[in-house]
Amino acid sequence: MKYCLRCLQPNSRPGTVFIEGVCPACEFKFTSTKWDWQNRKRILKHVVHTRKAVGHESGHDSVLGVSGGKDSTRLALFARDALGLNPLLVAVTYPPEQMTIAGSRNLNNLNNLGFDVYQTSPSPTTWKLLMRAAFLESANWAKSTELALFSGVPQIAIENGLELVLWGENPGLQLGALETLGKEGWDGNSLRNMNTLAGMNEQWLLGQNIDESHIGPYLFPSKSEFEKHNLQVVFLGWAMGNWGLLENGLMSGLVGLQGRRDSATNTSDLIYLTSLDEDWVILNQMIKYYKYGFGRATDYVNEWIRTGRITRSEGIPLVQKFDGVCADRYIESFSSFIGITTREFWLTVRKFSNANLFDLSGHGRPKPLFNVGQL
Ligand SMILES: [Zn+2]
Image 1 (cartoon, rainbow, N blue to C red):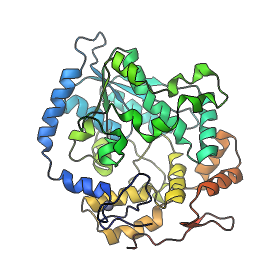
Image 2 (cartoon, protein in one colour; image 1 turned 90 degrees about the horizontal axis):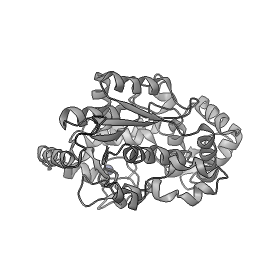
Image 3 (cartoon, rainbow, N blue to C red; image 1 turned 135 degrees about the vertical axis):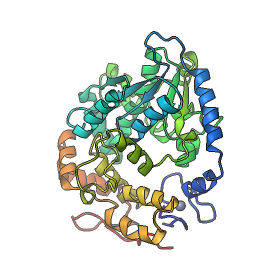
Image 4 (cartoon, rainbow, N blue to C red; image 1 turned 60 degrees about the vertical axis):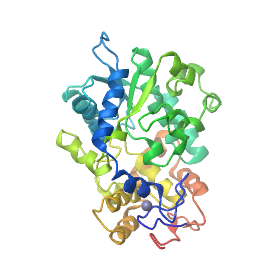
């Protein structure tokens, strides 16, 4: 495992290629300082006003997928206040066992900020079955649920006769997922090519022994459906110069976002503001750490290094302390929800952990064999 010369990103992140020792995200950050963000905003404004619905009976002119968290709160305000749009916010919500109180309050907060929020919840029975199958197959339960979170937004756009679909980050530019790049930086119509959507297809869903009539919420509209309904996905993050974990958190906090109550030593959420609508993401980040040698703390710390808030060497002890942290209670509640024991949970996690990066002997949690940040 090699680390980026500038930050603490290891080259074990899937799809990452370092150029002259530097990771794509550092390269992106460096290049982006030279861009004319005001001009991008002008271009984006022109694009969305060309594609928005005019005179729609609901008064809405676009849709925006939201979870109620820091990113979606900021996007909703940007779409309305900076771009002059009136988006219908679409939230695909979790079953009651998974949804947090903060998640539910934060959706209400969007209502209070003056937005119409359309909530849709796929059947919890199917949700649970698919989540269990995805976890046992790959130790990543979110593989199935992300399908629903991504697919619900264009589906509701089609259902409501709205063509403009607003999205946040451009994963191609911001995370180095090149398969999602469109014809322009703001163009999100290649989103269907991203790992989450391309890797889990209809065949997989049908192979899970569930009623065919229940897989609808997990199907991202096809290319021909996009063309038929003239859908255009637009990445708003493309024109937001200070898009970031901390900036989004601070700005959303100012308008009522409620943060996570549990300590970072139980959650590895260093700013108490990430993925607030549910808590099992904490164990998913821990598993990512055992698979690839980096977790959620790395993502925060890297952003702080890139924006000059801390130095690379100041970041090392933070990553050492917080990456892979997850309190037992989250593992217990998740295991109970999908109907496995915590022993089965750990057996599955160990099966998918990287034996070159972690000592997997014994019964405790895997121990890292690498030194964070060592060049
Ligand atoms: Zn880097």
